[in-house]
Amino acid sequence: MPVNLKLIPSPAIKPVAPKWWVWLLMLLIMIIVGINYAIMMKIAKPDMKNIIFWENALELPFLGWAFLLFFRLAWFKGQSNAAINSDRLREKQLNREIQRGQRCLNVYGLSLHTAFRTDTDTQGNLQWDALGQKKAALKTQPSWLGYRGVRHSRIKRNNEEAVEQLLKRGFANVLGELSPILAMMSEETSIAVLLECESHLNSHQIESTFKQCWDDSSIAQPVTRISGAGLGVIDQWLDQSSSEKTMLLVLAAQIEPGHPEGTSEAIVGLLLGHSLPMPNLPILARLHRPEQSYHTDVKDLEYAIAHSLKWIPITGERIESGWLVGIHSEHNIAVATALKAVKSPINIGQDLNNIDAIFGYPGCAAPWVAVACAAQFCRNGKAQLILSGNRTNAPLWATMVSPEGLSTQS
Image (tube, rainbow, N blue to C red; front, top):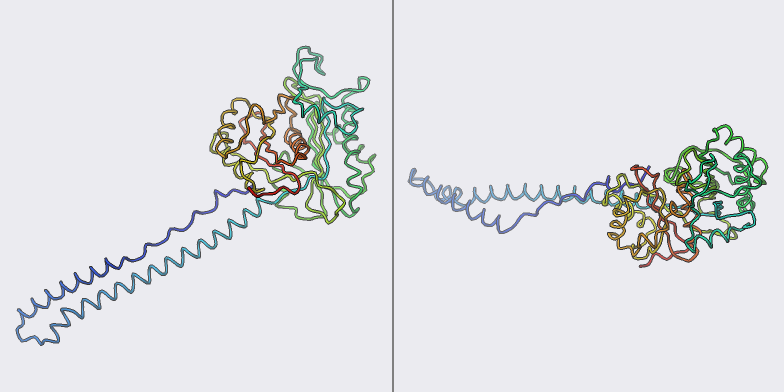
């Protein structure tokens, strides 16, 4: 479940200690009242003994005052101890939730195929260079439906291959790029696969294509399938799976979407896991717990961004660049205001790479494309902020990707 520090109760209200000057004044008043009472009794009964007179004048008021003071001090001590114990429990709960929030996954491998990448770009260097130079693949061209004047980006086809062939080639390329990393791991390491795909193909065709590609791959580890969608899977995985021998393989794609205007075709694979006792296995980056903004107003965005920074932890001043995907332009002012509130120097028009403007919206693959890009560009030694959504007013996600070994000192 998401880490929501708002659910942690506020610090306990501390009781006010008794003010001694008030109690001394009260003692004086009670003695004055007692003396007056004793005088009136003496007038009414002239034969009253002196010892009774002084009992009424001093002893009874003092004993009454001492009785009230004792109970006042006992109440104060009890309330004070209750507040201290409550704050101790709160502190434990807060530390426990912060520790849970600061769990992260290592990015051991990534593979991204977009319109920037060709078959000759075997390592993807040309694709990353194009992204680094802020080139755009989004352009007006005929869509797969045959309509002209549709602004979108498409993965390059080989000899007019059909969509199933393209998807099979994409899955095979991603698994082929990740399999050498899996070959370095023990065969006892299990793999949980999350498959997300948007296409006009039906689910049976997608599953059949994936299964065929998996069977043809050289991956020897046992595999299980998990359900879910988007960054919520990461949030759940960090809580439910702490096994070092289980890797999470995310395979997401958008191929020939039903409404291609403003979209991009993309196939992405991410190999994620907890720390493994294998020194020869490099860590590309760290994917920290995504933080959900339950609304799109400034305060909720500020809360989500601030807590995504807390999970590293790192200050906003050190976040200089990031990635934006699936967020409508009408939210740009709220995003810019929230970034300013956490003291980030990011200029939303220059430092936040808008994937929707570069490629087009990648559909269900959107957050994973952003994670792959952020992990790749973390190699400059700087953490990357990701703000992602699904092009609606649904909750947005703030996610941090940091380079391995990042210093958290401000």
